[in-house]
Amino acid sequence: MSANVKQKRTLMEWVRGYTGQKYITTVLFLLIPIVLLTIFTLIPAVNMVIFSFQERDQLGVNPKWVALDNYVTLFTDPTYLSTFKNCIYYFFGSFIQLALALLIATILCSKIKFGNLFKGILFFPYMMNGVAVSLIFRRFFQKGDGITNSEGTLNTILALFGLDPVKWLSTPGLVNLCLVFASVWRYIGFDIIMFIGAIQSISPDIYEAADLDGANGWQRFWYIVFPSIRSIIALQLVLAIKGAASVFEIPYIITGGRNDTSTFVIKTIDTAFTYKKVGLGSAMAIVLLLIILIITGVQKLCFRERK
Image (cartoon, rainbow, N blue to C red):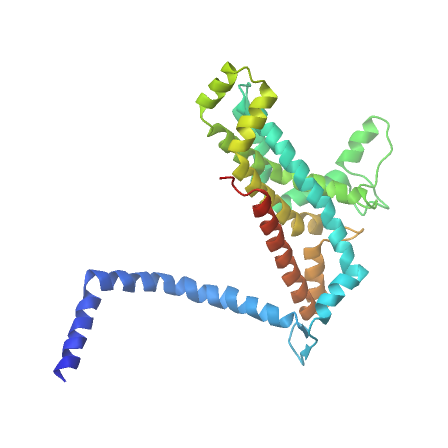
């Protein structure tokens, strides 16, 4: 009996002490975030994996276990395979975006007039709301459906030079190029600012040593700038490719996925909520997650730090 009392007193002393108070406070601060993370992230993620092996509607009435049938449908049905083709446009656009951002950042890091003004102008589109950017470009390329009415800011400019209007958002192939242009215009400012910060962190002594050795501009970039900002380039490449694989906002608002512009994310949302195929939509979400993980793994292998 005395041993139990002594143990309780020891426990109470620990609770009232500094160490006990520290642990209790930490647990209390972490309790709410952990509960929210479990309810809104972990449980839905587990359910999504389970749903991907089922045939079910959004209400979950009479779900049917179909094993891998949903995944087989994704990689055999041309309706879903076509969305991967549209992502290729954004993949190439992401590489062009990074190359332009690196070039512009290198120029802005040199001593040019109004450099800070140009930085602000180029970064401003990234600060804008994605919906606003999409609406601006939809009106820029055309007004109306593009078939009965092809007016738009760009066509108005072309008309001033005596050129015929172009159906920018209803011509196959061309419409995806227009959407990629809008995406690059919005996100390139973030890449430029990241590259500028990385380039400016390079020690000036390295540049002075290169000048003494007679290095030209290209040699300075290839042997000093590029190796020094290698990790930042790798990070931006992962973010760009991830964004290309999961692009949604711009094509959904500008075209609504019409005219062969539907992306994998748009198709996933339509499958799950428009056509009420929650099981197939969950399988598409799992596939998208795996694609992003594979891209990240390949990037780490290609840009791993040399010892």
